[in-house]
Image (cartoon, rainbow, N blue to C red):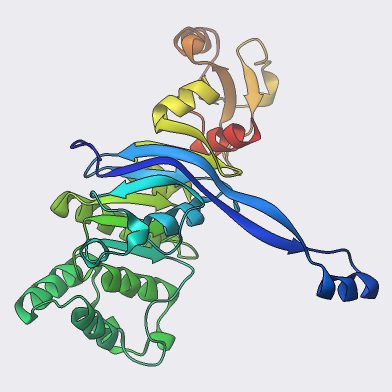
Length: 327
């Protein structure tokens, strides 16, 4: 690992042997005597490096290899091939010093005991990580301030709402103040308000502790709010590693101009750009034009039509990501 990078991944690969058979009774009996296997490459020679304090979006469709990669980096899985260093440690060697400096939080997995208050699970984590009482109380005060835990931690986990449980999951994963956070869908299933609070918390945690964060999410608002850099993975292979804005310029080099017109149906706008779909119920007419022509098209629209409102925006990042995967 170089001084500049806290995470370095080189040719990281994970292949599973999966049994398969035809349907039917005869095939089922035959499989008892001779089973057929095929190799499934979950992660295929992935490589990237991340600097301390970076927040990186790790994106891909379901089954792309995102969670498998995070499990290898957190030491839960051994790779089939390749190397990785996090803070100078090889993750799957499971050194105590390494495990005390990272956390893996999965939105679809529960780390809290279901029948007891979250506060009791926090005390268990204090014992596991051997955190002194003074440090523990200070950390809990900070987490309470950032996450607004309040009396939530006193309720049995089974009685918490999804948003409350996710806040407690984050607190449980951060009691030992890890330097590296692997977050797998931390806002999945949460309402818009809860998602915004979690994002604000992660932003503040990163600012306070210069924490390095790898985030997977199907909510693009998470990525655009937190990550300037994204890594795209598809079918286990690395597709893109770079700035989110640069990806938009490469994949969708156009602007979307919103035009407000009274009786818009009376005007033919085909000469200005390609008509595109706006938000439901939006009175604006949207035109897609090449990015380099946005200024000139806007000037023409203002000069030639009785416009009462106009906007210029980049294409929705969801569309950019979808085009990247389709391409």
